[in-house]
Length: 192
Length: 171
Image 1 (cartoon, rainbow over the protein chains, first blue to last red):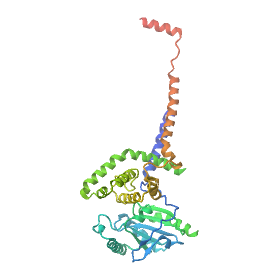
Image 2: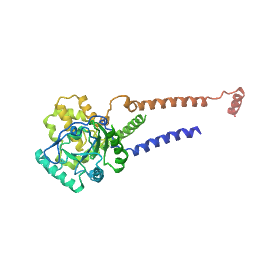
Image 3: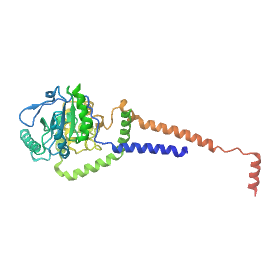
């Protein structure tokens, strides 16, 4: 009896480990930025020659959503964000991440030309698919992205009134994630 | 507790991945090299400052690319890897030490970027778990062998048996 039981228990243990491992998303890497102040930046906005920085949102709970027109998963996520933004529960700021890609012809053009092109492209895209953002900022070279630990667009951050990152999600935001995780968190953060 | 378990499991899966990593990485880079041909985005800066590039390679071999997680930052052709190499280059130019550069990346992407994570309570399971398992296995083996030896000990022969054996051998 014992002879059968021990290998069986070991085997079941191994199967449980492998099963859990299969269900885990290898893209989900815990961010060291959780509960740390959101990195400062000052970037041009989509609209005009105004700049935006996270300090402008002090005293508000807000979301930062990293996106780009070339990003396929963003297109999947976008209707969810638009519907969410319509409810006016929390301001969403867009971070347009490296809109002009190395394979683009304009990549080697001067910064101003690239910025202009990126703005045009982004505005067309937002007009077509809806605009969930209170403002969107242009991270042309992806440096702000690096400071936020961005490694796969889209990514979404929830930032509290004191400017501390409280939550990060890599990949498209789903209605389920919004209802189960993000909204309760925002309600809690708004209370404090 | 859950975190520790998760880390342990991470260690287990990471070691499994490492076994298969090099071949996969080489296959991918080889393939890329063929498809991108002369484009060689990384080839240009090499000539500019060979010392800097050598240090870049040294450091980035110890770092994981987050997009293609089996590849080091040195061998990856992912765009993010290009950006991170640019960042590392800038930090080298600023005169930062290897440790400072690694800290810069860990602060943004976590311990996951290090192929050799720091030894600290959170990573004890990762570093010492395999040795602990080996020790447990050795203890089990010892107990098992002892039990077997006890079973296999030959029963003493009585004089009667000896006489009978002699008789049989004679025939």
